[in-house]
Image 1: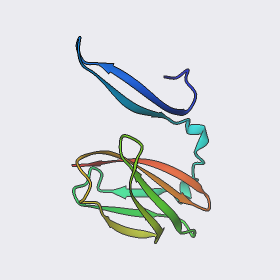
Image 2: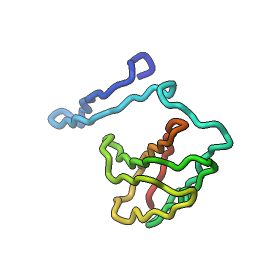
Image 3: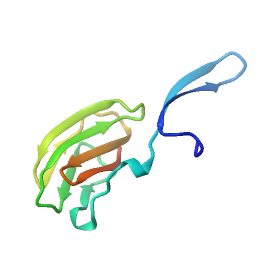
Image 4: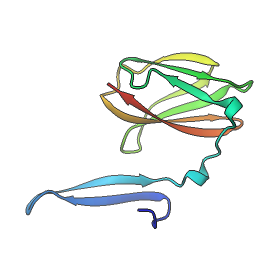
Length: 116
């Protein structure tokens, strides 16, 4: 999908002669995300995680918002006003791959996390 612009797409998958499934695909252009400099790096651990995820960052700015997205691009949980170190309980999430969108005054960063 390199030639397609960023956006939401619906893809039909053929699963044999009689079955098909439509899935939602989200293509993001990495140039649309303002990366933070290395001194504002976010550390997420453990990754993969079971129930709790630790979020640490090196910045004088507070993280204003964290959204957790599932593979369909839906927000499954959200956190506001995160301190420089925070332990978040995500045991309600099912096993799988999720995307954290972390925002503060310096920009935003996307981080992939895996729940075991």
